[in-house]
Length: 111
Image (cartoon, rainbow, N blue to C red; front, side):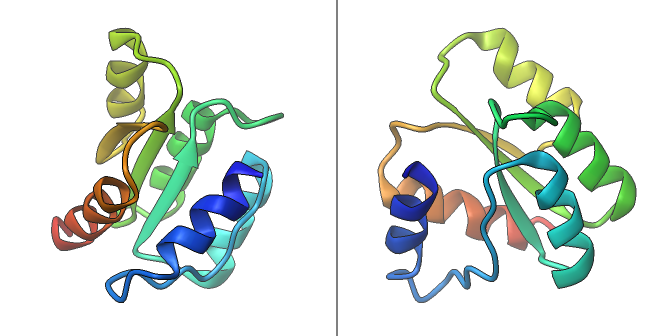
């Protein structure tokens, strides 16, 4: 449900093109290889392959890719772990749509 709501919000932003969504890390890695996005938005608590492992695989498979990790946890160690895994940014899920879209655009421009 969160994925669909976020997709709907992001699709209203002219700066962002949503090319695919999925609810697990393994599919995210496969989709990124097939679709070649500039930026991938990854939930820290994905089922199966978690967000940290997904981030590591994405960055290893495509060194220029930018990963923005989202989490519901405010624990500082989660943010640092995401950045250590190769994420460009770490955001809280409770952030406003504009904040998430801004982070995606900033990650893209950081390339």
